[in-house]
Length: 134
Image (tube, rainbow, N blue to C red; front, side):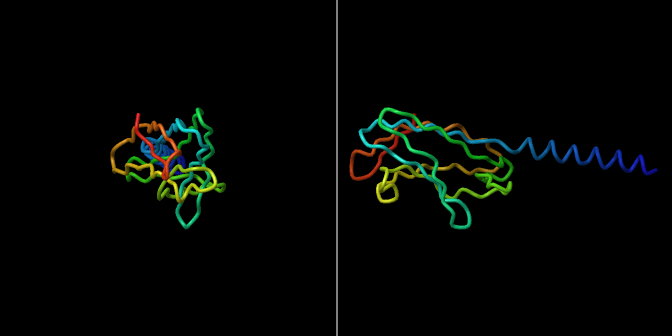
């Protein structure tokens, strides 16, 4: 009887793990800096944290990814202890003044829909950074 219960427990645990991994994916970003000014991309994370996603020099590219729970549409970044921290917003702007010059990068959050990769061409040469989807 104990062997039977242990086997049932293992089967259920495996089914739950398979179900969870089937809904967890990633959303990939590629940012190409077509301007003459270095850009920095950042994200506002749950609980008032922010994350620097990297700098992108003129003529260079920056790539980054976030996790996505497809079942709920939640976009997240894992912290150092393995917690999923919800991503509130993402932006790129001129280095040293990225918040004031930012271009918001829209995050599609739709339950049941796997997000497509996001490819952007950005320039920070004007008063505000401008990004266009590719």
